[in-house]
Every structure is written in structure tokens, then in C-alpha cells.
Length: 134
Ligand code: HEM
Image (cartoon, rainbow, N blue to C red; front, side, top):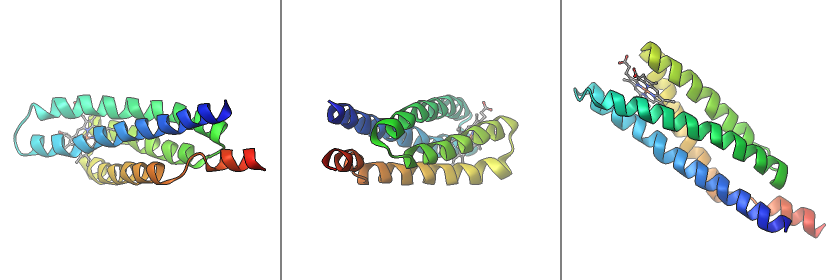
């Protein structure tokens, strides 16, 4: 029973992080289109910002469940760092503080890509199996 729930939790984290990476990858594309003169793309970038941050907050909840069920804290720590950066990013974008928004945006995209690779590479169920086998 624990293994089925744990398995589902691990896959839920992977699904949410995958949606997160897709959503955040669109942001520099919309920003680039806007900066080259397609002003409607700023609207897409603003909608993208709401989608990215919403997925980020959902990921916090899933990461807490992973922490409790799979006894793995690193997805929660990494998610909190990403969500903090995205929150600063959101307000820097609204303020037009591009000196901060563009470099932090690049770093945030890289961080989510690294997290995506990590959640797909890590065997999330290992600790549960070890605990069960002990
Ligand atoms: C490499 C990634 C990114 C780049 C290059 C970028 C670039 C930009 C640019 C050029 C603007 C227009 C600013 C202005 O006209 O003053 C902007 C606005 C904005 N950005 Fe980003 N951005 C990136 C990622 C993100 C992310 C990840 C978020 C959300 C977490 C975000 C949220 C916003 C918001 C809320 C605005 C204001 C939109 C509005 O005025 O309606 N951006 N961004």
C-alpha cells in the first residue's frame, strides 16, 4: 500500500516538474518576441508568468508530500529556492527592473531544467525500498 502511494507521489512530482520546465521555457521566447517588436507577446509573457508561478506553488505542495512519504527532502529544498527566485522574478518583471529580471530569469530557467533532470534521474523510491527491506 505504501509502495503504491509512494510510487504515485514520485510520478506526480515528475509530472509537475515536467509541466514547470515546459511553461518556463516559453518565457524567454515570449520576452524575445516582445523585444523584437511583437508587443502582444508581453501579454503571453504575463500569462506565462502566472502559469509558471502557479505550477511552482503546486510543486511546493507535491514536494512536501514527497518529503513525508518518500523521506526525500531535496526536492522540497530545491523547489523552495526556485519558487523564491520566481517570486522575485515576477515582481522584477512588473517593475520593469530588467537589470535583475533578465539575469535572474536565465538562472531560474537553468535551475528548473537541472531540477527536471534530477527528478527523472533520481530513483525516488529507493529510500522507501531501503526502509521496507531493513
Ligand atoms: C529568461 C527569462 C526571462 C526573460 C528574458 C524575461 C524578460 C522580460 C521582459 C523583457 C519583460 C518586459 C519588461 C518591460 O517591458 O519593462 C518582462 C516582463 C515580465 N516578466 Fe519576464 N522574463 C523572463 C522570465 C520570466 C519569468 C520566469 C517570470 C515569472 C516568474 C516573468 C515574469 C514577468 C512579468 C510578470 C513581467 C511583467 C509583464 C507585464 O508588464 O504585464 N518573466 N520579462
